Amino acid sequence: MLSAEAVLFGPTLVLVAISASITDYKYRKIHNSLIIRALLASLVLNVVYFLNSDVVISTYLYFLAVSAAASLILWLIKFWKPGDVKFYFVLSSFLHPKFSSDFLMPFLVFAILSIIWIAVDVIKTKEVEFKFKFEPSTLLAVGLFPILASIGISFIVGILLLFLIGKKIKKMTNIIFLMAIASFLINPSGALQILCFVLLFSVINSFKFKGNLASGPLLSASFIYCLVFAQL
Image (cartoon, rainbow, N blue to C red):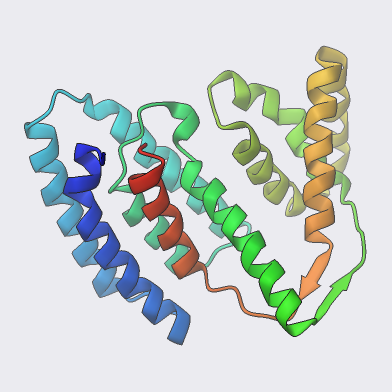
């Protein structure tokens, strides 16, 4: 059975997702007018929702803040374009996670779908190159994740975000390396587990394909999944 959130927010989310996916896939652009209309619709629906439920609004606002911060970080490291940031935030306004470990679940689903998209594209076009490369700065995940884990950030999502950030701050490699060593001294087994994920992401990042990755449809599918199926 669908939750009350899915029934209330689902139809609008699906409509926004389909509209944005079409324009992003065809023109690689999500219009600001659609973002504004979606935000207004979300505002109205959330007013109705919170006035008729005993749900604490602070958790929802915290979720929006985390979503905004994560998407802005991905823009700053040039992983996402401004349109992706705005689209991620507006879609986040339609979700109401109950636990902090679920706050970045849409991004995790997006990452999984992106890998599947790329794999299918590679199989279809056979235009792919592989050259393994490991950047020491990606050890930022090893050095910092124990801190993020203590505040309830999703394990795999946290490592992936820190991995992407580490790729862009190569000038701090020495400091990051020292942080990683400290992490191993504090918790060897936990640090080793994180290192395994870092190496896995490094392998995935070593593949280069010549296809196009339309983030709009994948983000849309991620949020629809989280709202309807994952029941966040």
